[in-house]
Length: 352
Image (cartoon, rainbow, N blue to C red; front, side):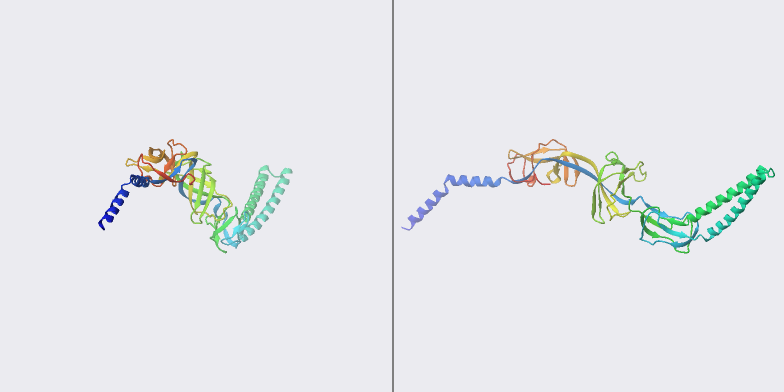
């Protein structure tokens, strides 16, 4: 009697599993799960700027080693290292005792020569002296006048003045020390005419010109200056390293910059205001080095070859014609094949 109910249960269970509707539901679920999920980037136009990076440094156009114009002994040092000085401010004064003594002698000689000249002039007018005697007296007088003028100039140059505004970087003289025009006495650094300078390869000459936009980054102080322009491109190639010097004037408002500070210069050598750019991760290469991308068309994967141009950071300019709005596969591109159906889970058209 117990065998009959057990047989009935097995029969009913077998009939339930043979239901064709259950098999279709399971099959559809399996197919649905096999469609890969991908994210895409929607192609759009944007501005593309390419920069050539070179190493450079800050230079000052107003930087000089100050030297005296005459020999002398240091009497007064008016400034010290680190001081800021204005143009025409006195820096050092030399002793003029010897020059003043010579000037006193010259003035006596000048007075006597003038007296002799007047006498010779009167005698010449009276017909007693000759014209040659008059000219000799006149020449002696003029020579002494020039000697006096030379001494006055030397006395004037005994005080050295700052030729421009700047900072005294170093002093190389002490009171009582004898100096000459061969000896520098101060290192004066002006901060009003700062430039960034670098040596670039001669191969870059065809791509840059005066007024090219540049950006400069200073790693030591962590500052970046934008919207600068090249103000000078050298007219000679260095025969040793095949480079050309370039310069750009820095803004006077940049107070943290000092000469010889290292700089990273980004020269804008190419600009396209309406280009198609893709991030490097979207572009694939085959074994032969050909570049291509995987796109979605009507829900299926399609592979198209592309030609690429310059790269700036992770952005690459695409030179091939690609329709605006094309969906380029991003995440999941390495796992899908040509003609395979895919499902989009995220669009990256707004990604920068």
